[in-house]
Length: 281
Image (cartoon, rainbow, N blue to C red; front, side, top):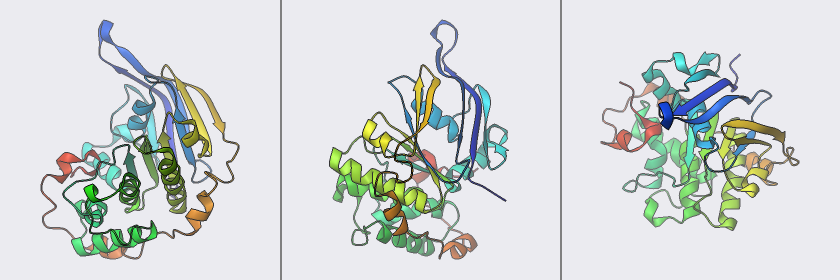
């Protein structure tokens, strides 16, 4: 039986060489999703290795040593094309800046990963629109990122991360560009929607309030894990998490149609602008 479990063992990574070498990870081991979907915050001071750890776990960069195993396969043994496909299908991404394509409306931004994965425009946009409705953006499908507030744009980014029904979502400072009130609402939605889709969430953050909304907090210092603890509110992440999750059923109704159809000409230049939607070659 396939499970959404990610196992990282003895990860080491260094930037540079010789005297200029700067260790980023040193013998890091952790498991995500061992007992089912969970929200994990990765915290630490600047330079502690938080973002490097997220990038290694997501297969964006390869560790110098160690293994990252997803659904029984070591990411390091995969071909580049396989890792690209995995990041587009099994993994979802939410970034501080959102990284939405400014010239595309919300529904096309969300549909783009499905189209680049081989789905038709009509099926992909139908699935994207359904998810945006569930996230409270049903009236904003045609708006471009510049016509959205910061919180609305991040909800579009959350929808894009979830549209392919990933097993795990990686978020790098997802509320860093938002005010505290909006950030709290976005974080609750991110946790609730991700867990509601049966996926785990890994969040890199420097904000204790964001971390406390998660069920587990991993702290790094100098590239090493110094603590890995369950948060006090593990039963109810973010307070509103379970309620939000209950209100957001998974979106699988268009899955068969998307899988059966191919898109002849994905939007030019899109893959070059977004690392999470690379086209396999």
